[in-house]
Figure 1 (cartoon, protein in one colour):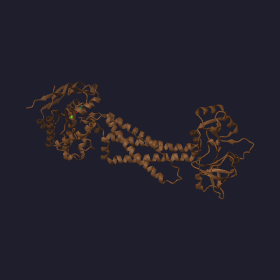
Figure 2 (cartoon, helix red, strand yellow; figure 1 turned 30 degrees about the vertical axis):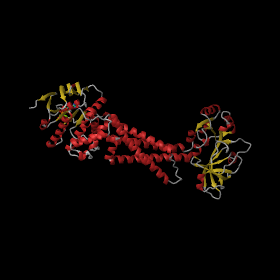
Figure 3 (cartoon, each protein chain N blue to C red; figure 1 turned 180 degrees about the vertical axis):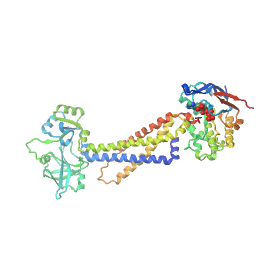
Figure 4 (cartoon, rainbow over the protein chains, first blue to last red; figure 1 turned 120 degrees about the horizontal axis):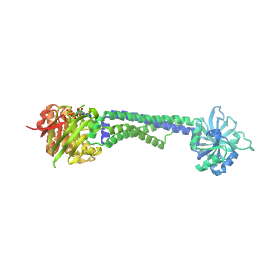
Length: 366
Length: 228
Ligand SMILES: Nc1ncnc2c1ncn2[C@@H]1O[C@H](COP(=O)(O)OP(=O)(O)OP(=O)(O)O)[C@@H](O)[C@H]1O
Ligand SMILES: [Mg+2]
C-alpha cells in the first residue's frame, strides 16, 4: 500500500483513465445482469416462484411444459409414488383475450390448478377464487396497465368464455405473458371437456425429494421428471434470451480481464528498471507482487463502487415497464466475479515482476 | 575480526562454451571498518561486475565473499535479499530513485521494506536529509531535483538502513566535477562518521584523494595502487 497509493497520487491521469474504463465495463456488466434477471422473471416468474421442485412431463414433450399432456390416469400412477398433497396437476394454455367492450387483443397464459393446493398464487388485491366457481379468475397485476380492473370481464378468444376478474396476483408471468389463474372447472370449460370424460392437464408439479422424482421417472411409463431449471429452459425463447445475455456478460468479464492485464503489463514493462532497483535495495518479489495486486484491487473496488451507484441511479430513472431487477445477491456475485477476474488479469505482470533480476539496477557495460 | 568485507579468490565467468569470458580472475580484497575504497580501471574491465558480486546482486563463479562475518556466496536468493536490505547500501550510477516518491518517502521506503516503519524511522530520515543538506527538498519528487541533489538523496537512501557497507557505481558520472566532489565528500564523511566501509567505482581521478585506498582492475586482475 505504501507504494500503491503514492504511485496513484503521482500518476493520477493514467490510473483515472483505466479506472474509468473499468467503471464503464462494470456498469455494463451490472446493467446487463439486471436486465437478464429482469427479463428472466418477466418471462417466467410464475415458474420461478412456484412452490415445486420437479415437474412430471410427457416424455415426448422435449422439456416444454406447454407441449406436454397428462391424463387423470397418469396422475393416479404418479400419486402411487408421491403423496397426493405433494403432487399438483397444472394446466398451461397460452391464449389471447379481449377486455369486455374493447376489441384490443391481449396475450396471457392461463394457469389451471387446485386453488387450495400448493400451486395457488398469492393474491395481493381483491380475493382468491375457489374450486367451484365457473366464471371467476385472478390475473397478474401487470394486466392493469392494459386497463383491467377488479370486477372487470375478459373474453377468451379461443373458447369464447367470459370471466370476471376478482383478484390480482403479483409477479406471475409465463413466456413473457401475464398469467391468469383459474380452477379446473373453468379449465374444463375453456377446453370444452365433457364432464364425464377424463380431465387433461399439461404437467404435474412435484414437491418431493430427488430420489422420489427419479423413482417416478423410472416406474411411470411415458413420463419424464425435470427440475425447475430444465423447465425454465423449456419455456419458448427463455434459453435463447438468457443465453445471449449471459454471453455478453461473459465477454465483458473477459474484456475487463484483458484491459487490466494489458494496462498493468505495459506499466510493468515500463517500470522494469524501477523494479530492479527495488529488488536491489531489498524488496522481495512478494512485496512487489502485493504492490501490484493491491493496485489492481484498489482500482477494481473503487470502480465497482462507482458503477454500482451508477447502475442503481440509472435503474431508478428507468420506466417501470422495463424489466430490470438488480438484487443485492446479484450485485455481490458480479462484484466477486469482477475481483477474481481482475486478479487473474494481473497474473501476467506478477510473472514478469518475479522474473526481474536485481542486477538490472546496476549500470552494465553493454 | 574487523574486516567488513572479504573477497577471497573470487572469479566470475560470463557465457559458456566458446564465448566464455573470464571477467574476474581470482581476485581477493579485504576492507576494514572505516575504509573508503575506490575501484578504477578501463571500461569493460569488470568494475561493475566486481561491485555487483560484492553487493550480493550477482553470484560469483567461484570464491568466497564474507560480509560482516557472514559467508554470502552460498545463500539463497531470499536470504541475499535480506542481506541487501539490512547490510548493504547502494548508490547507482544515475538517478535510480523511484519517480513517484518524494525525497522523504524514498528513505522511508527502506524502513517500510524492512517492516520497521515508525517514528524512529521518520526521525532518522529527517536527520539524514538534514545532514546531506536536503531538508528543504523533503517533499519534492526526483524529477524536480538537480543531478547532484538526486545523488545526495541516493546516498541518504543508502545510509537509511544503517548498512555495514555502501557500494557506489560511478555516483558522480552525471555530475560536474565540483558537485561530484561534494557528493563523494559526503559519502566519505558518512563512512568515517559511522565506522562503515564503502567501495566506489569511478572514472574520475580527481576523486581519488578523498578515498583511503585505490584498487585497479584490468584483465580480470586486481592490484592495489599505493597511495603516494
Ligand atoms: N550478464 C553478462 N553476460 C555476459 N557478459 C557480461 C555480462 N555482464 C557484463 N559482461 C561483460 O563483462 C565485462 C565487464 O563488464 P562490467 O560491466 O563489469 O565493466 P565495467 O568495468 O563496469 O565497465 P564500464 O566502466 O564501462 O562501466 C564486459 O566485457 C561485459 O561485456
Ligand atoms: Mg560499469
